[in-house]
Amino acid sequence: MVRSTARSCVAAALALLALGAGTVGADDPKLLPNDRAFAFSARGVDERTVEARFVIAEGYYLYRDKLRFTAEPAVALPALPPGKIKEDQFFGKVETYRNQIVVTLPLEAAAPGKPVTVHAESQGCADLGVCYPPQVQNVTLTLPLAGGRPGMPVEAPQKKSWLQ
Amino acid sequence: MRGWRRSPWFFGALAGAIALAAGILWRQLAVDSTSTTDRAANSAPLLALTLPDATGEQETLGQWKGKVLIVNFWATWCEPCKEEMPRFIKLQDEFGPKGLQFVGVAIDQPEKVRAFAKDIGLNYPTLVGGYGAIELSKTLGNRVGALPFTVVLDRAGGVVLTQLGPVKDAQLQSMIRQLI
Image 1: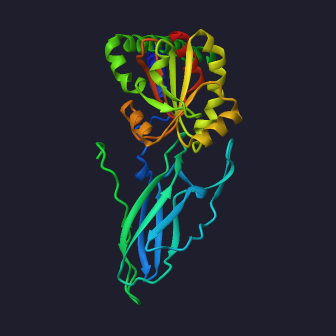
Image 2: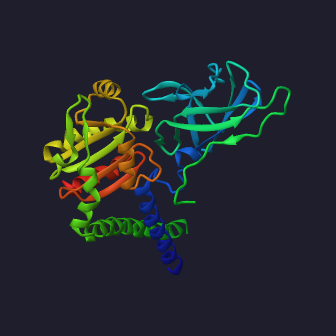
Image 3: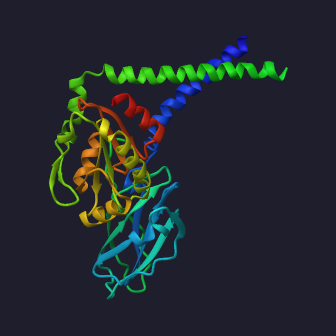
């Protein structure tokens, strides 16, 4: 009887926990801010090439057709790698990226040793059932000189939050 | 022996069910124990929200005060938002005559909102806003500014529920039945 009472208490506690969790749903304290779920960085590979990178947190994905890169000075339209097909009820078949995506951005003209500002527009969601608004992240880097070593990645600044 | 071993679990489940009921009651009391003025104050910026609807008419959320008001922040670029809207349409159909009013706040472009509203046969108004509307939702607990985000207001304008992510149908239905 003692055991059964103990079990009843455990079951009751679990039920209460479930109730608490049930009202929260996707409002998980672990949900990341937009710019942390999709961390953008870029580096200069050579005097006319920038490599752009999104590191995508586990449980999050970016839509391929929402990804746009622009830069000053101008870059050519990049070739986006194929994504993973996802079947959406309303969108139908869509391509998504997970984990990370690396895109090469060729400048229209070489600019050795010059600064380049890259703007990355993206839109993604979390598997928990929420989507983030489109965001633009900016990185300014310096291109290597002709024949020089590739630059270090420069991370897009993340908004300060009270969590940090 | 098996039967005896199972019975504590039966009692456990029974206790769980009682606790669940008590929990619901307790939550209700907890909500009710907040003074009406405080709760109304929480929702004041939301009720003051004035935005064009999908046809360009300016609408203020406060015009629906006195009804059980469910404000759903959504967008056509948000798949989970779109997936839960047919359920909202059904609830609006069922409970609208009893005083329930759904209102959408789309973070979107008017033409996209109009096209989607027509596609799914939206039977409640939706306002169209920008990032300002997302910022407003943050003041109501939408910590990361994502969608869908839903706020349930009682007839006095008090915030009863805020939910980031899809709302569970059973939870929403029981809440509507209590508030209506």
